[in-house]
Amino acid sequence: MPLPLAAFLSSICLWIAENAGKGTGVWIYAGTIGLDLVSFAWMGALYLLLHVGFANMTLIYRDALYHQSITGNRATKAPRSTEHPMSEG
Image 1 (cartoon, rainbow, N blue to C red):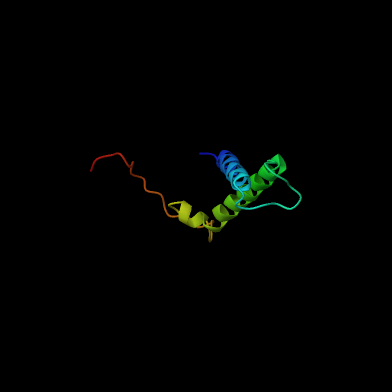
Image 2: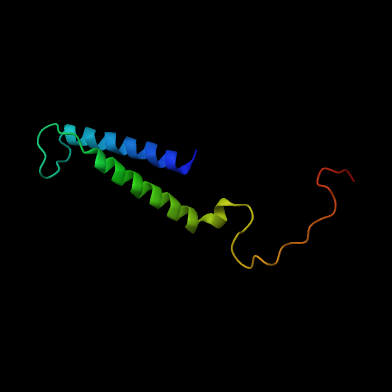
């Protein structure tokens, strides 16, 4: 799943959960009354927070995400084998 889509869907779920919590009286925001919905701007803020958080974690743990390390000296590469990987023998 692409990162922007994952962040967007997660922000929608969190926005719905916040509206459910606010509607049931679990928490109350200052300046709101009754069953007012949490603003759509808050969903945008959640999207930005999740997108930046996912991007930061991807940068921090990028070596664990790839089979081959991408940090270190990139000028030195392992010698390539002249043998085709699908050849027998």
